[in-house]
Length: 262
Length: 371
Ligand SMILES: Nc1ncnc2c1ncn2[C@@H]1O[C@H](COP(=O)(O)OP(=O)(O)OP(=O)(O)O)[C@@H](O)[C@H]1O
Ligand SMILES: [Mg+2]
Image 1 (cartoon, each protein chain N blue to C red):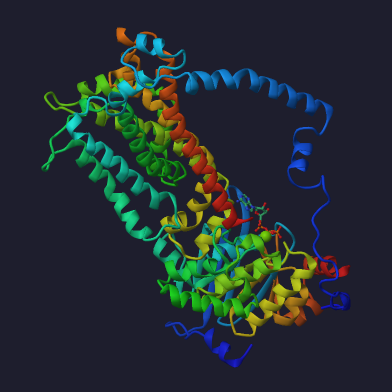
Image 2 (cartoon, chains in turn purple, orange; image 1 turned 180 degrees about the vertical axis):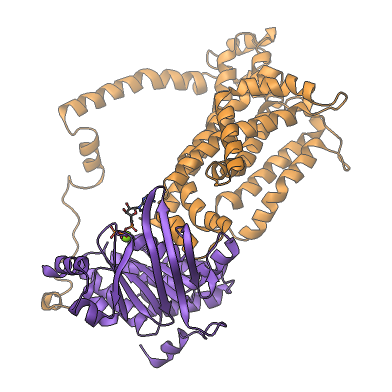
């Protein structure tokens, strides 16, 4: 991707003057009596790329879903782009406009064409004129390398193509942060690469990314920081070289040996 | 492209028709009617049954039928088949009830305008659809004015409405208003607001637990107790309201089924994009949920349309009521077959039309989504 695209995703620093895009302080979450997230503290800076990993059921999905309020937290604070997440619907909407999310199962809208999927948000949330929204959508579809599928329906595409459309759909909203929840784990092996390539290209544009994935190769090449979670806690976080080279905790070592071992 | 693909010379294998017996009508006959001895036996038996039923039926309804006569006796003198002359004689009252003759053009005009209003609603590939839809929204007021009169037209009381016109009015009104109300109830039932949810559930369960006839009796008698004395509240209007409420309860449940078939991920994707509740419902959830619900919705509408005959119980003379009372005419004694068959044909055409439209719509949406 060219230099011009880098500029596009470098938004002006927030008014507060600090460049922390996401700030999570002493955050807890319960499902009923079940304590899913315990004392989470995490800050993500503008342009930072973070990979979250951990065993199944450790609360990775729950954590990133709290960031755009798909899940509600019960204690502590979450601030996104300086806006605190509370029950205030206005603030939730404001945050959701700035945060894009890519799901494991794509969640494209099957009754809309690829192009309509991409323009829905800009037209209805950002009030972009249809013409402009379509032009922008085509630009993003080109970046994820499927402009020729624009008029097809999601059901007519392969899994990898659908996930790339989902990424383009999120980008069309011009988000400041992108959340990924295991974007490749529902894909056949031969399609994983095309999606990872798209994400690597996105990372090179300076997008702030928070990515739950078990693709450790991706973590090594792209991540600024790797976070390991277990049983609802952040156990360890470090730059990839240190994280993979000299993991500190027994649980991290065990997890890494399991996931990299074979 | 790989080598094997490049090596292939196009035109080397020209298209050929399949061999005789593997195509066309012979193949169809063979696979569908004579594929096995049991199938062959059933085919022959069916042909025999058709031979027994169809010729006498055609004789009665068409070849031996009488169209011009002034009494049943005259019918019988002319031929032995159906005495359609009776229907022809009563067609006016069967169609318009007691609507004054000189104003019946207004009923006809409203019907033509109704068709014109339905076209842009039912088909999305008509020219100027936007204007058509605006007109469709205005149509109920135009029709109300034409049928009831006033503002320069001779007023006609709703007690003079009757026949097929009455069934059509009740059916079309019920269908038109029960759909949005039913969708609203279905959404209400899923609402996170306890009051909205409770009210929706109570309403739906009440409607589903009470027969329509009971509601119609309530409409015709009980409401008078609740209304301040001296107020007149048109009986037809009460019936329209009751029928609409009744159908909306059923529509709500059908739509709820559709809503439940939408995976959670669709809500999440819509929410995470920043769409507001109503936007995500209108743009993402309902289009998918309603598509799934089409068969159930049309089923409800068909039931509703046939139930319009129940108004005869509270004294409104719909086509069935008028047909029944016309049987009492001594001049035309004993022609109930002709009357009921005609009425059945009227309902069949309307309901079959709805059924076909639902199939057309499903097919069209299927092509679009193609999961
Ligand atoms: N809606 C819910 N109600 C109750 N418990 C839930 C709910 N969603 C998730 N959980 C539980 O919370 C825990 C964390 O779930 P979460 O989906 O965040 O795990 P995860 O780390 O993303 O796992 P995976 O790698 O399998 O996706 C799990 O034990 C799960 O069973
Ligand atoms: Mg998960």
